[in-house]
Length: 516
Image (cartoon, rainbow, N blue to C red):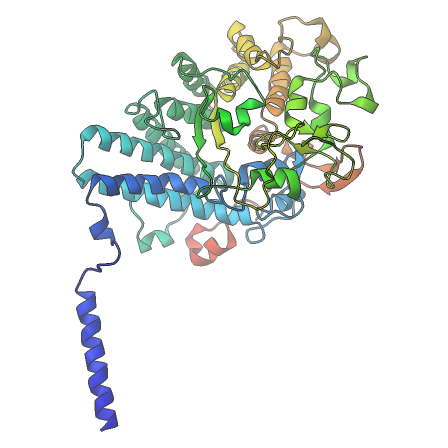
């Protein structure tokens, strides 16, 4: 009897399971039931944006990804962040021991999958053609952004344009040139639809599409196209330099006229740890090499200036020095900074933190995930310098190149002397150089200073192929004490390895990048 009762119970259970499988769930959405209304379409598009805040992209929550990226350059160092950029900087990374290498691949494809699903599903939702087309254009921009991270860091990567299915787990890598062509196609199609001004803060615009296109053309050595795309952004007359370099990165000035595209954060639900890592964790500690890269306020290099005092190296410097850095002897949060305030190198960044010399912000950020300053992905100063760089690389140098560089240097409150066609103060450094070589060096220094601490410089030294020089050898604290010795393998490290887990799950991703 017991066996019989048990058999009946199993039959009832199996029948119940069958009934459940034949009935749509009432307590949650499925792929078939979700994509029905305009509000659901908006939620799906919001999910495409939400991936921007993942650790592998721009790092919400306990992560500070773009700021940590700076620590793989001569500008800064890290010692134990979750991203493991410190492993990359020291040349001891591989496909399994660095969080950012695993997360960037995974989260880029998460974003791509969400965008692909949105693009496939939204076409059948009853809503206005204007809103539908704009949403699709925004999703194409985001898909292009996620794919740009894949080709920039890993090279070849599977090109997927359909909603996720299991078979995608077996795809081989697509040559990066084909992926790049799709990036440009998506950006062109999106730019043709999107408005000049955002429908709400953080939304994609025509300018953002053109700006990302300029960046990708520049990163891939297509200088004529980069210059043309950057000039298109300039000619929109939508953007200008914010007249306060320090204030550009403060919460009260978010979404100002210099911001072309940023990642929106808002306390308490959407936050990151930028303030905490700058003030307490010290996992983005500036290096002495960055300190020495800043010019004197008369435009001379420290090596050639009688005004430079090694004992007071902070005096008479480019004003961006004081707006970006904190050093022993300066004031921070209303107190003097000592050698022990920031133990790693004696230095920290102000940029992307609320804290400064005064104690205006009395409430300390005590925990991770409490900061909410937006991270700026694209800003107008970058457009000006990308335009100048592209024209320099083409050796097509005219007054507009000087004007673009000097606009950045001449921002109100910065007011650095302009770069001139013939400048006597440059004689010692540039006398034997052609205009192209001289301006290339000036431009690269200007990018380093203008974007210090923002996470742009790592990709700069990779695409310039200078990482094998500047990322090999010792790095120093504020007083020239050797902090550690870095290694960069020029035959391996210009591309990241495909994550080991991804190769294990999909052997068709082989071969890995050279020497991995």
